[in-house]
Length: 199
Image (cartoon, rainbow, N blue to C red; front, side, top):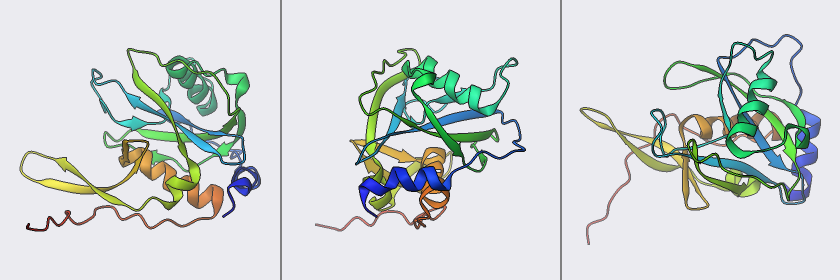
């Protein structure tokens, strides 16, 4: 697909449901509004209790006074990256996703200016970076090892901008491709362990 068409297709394809279920958490999938659009991603602080050091979208848990999933996504994005909510052109939402801890998370999608100035909240975010939407669509699933008590499992991941995107964040991107761009990316739940050739 032509890079220049990507944001146009997103604008045509995405909507907000009239009857939206309040999620326990929400994230903002912010995409730069330019000819070669990029996706805003963050790397979580290594000192956090949950998902430390993982790549994620700006977002977080619902507060008692949050009135909608959109409010949660915009508030959290502002807290983590200093993104001005008024700089976000909301496009729509993606289906609810379940995190590893069972929490229901709603992805909200919006366009942002390409030259937007962002500042990482140091207690939550180690790095803010942008990844090409087209490169994410083209990235092959690469095995990523997750070690458990008695075994290792290999999940599909994308390698972009010297970072590893896997798990919930990767699944949300696959959902964005499917519902926002009508693009079906092959994404298994688990992949085989990488084969190491003997020298």
